[in-house]
Length: 115
Picture (cartoon, rainbow, N blue to C red):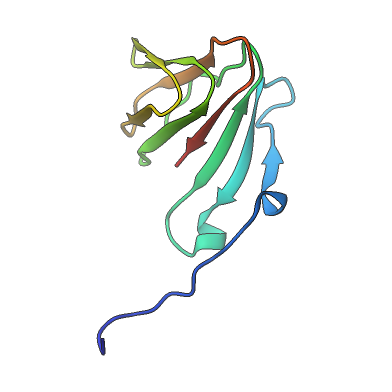
């Protein structure tokens, strides 16, 4: 135990999350759960909420690997031209520099956890 480091856990509830749209016309919202400033680590975790027919704009990250976990709803994920259907319980790992977008194709709002 002498060499182990204990880190006090950071606890947040949904009322603590910062929610925003990246652009005013976006059809999805991000609720920031943890970011590097809060977690004191190089980690970002969000809950992404998609309106019906909502989608992310095509985007990429130069260094970050992005992980999605589908909580609710059905969608289609596209990465570098490859499309796959996604539904609750599915996980999706997008490599750094992969151009990707996620679309809600269901009849209700959909929700994904993003890290």
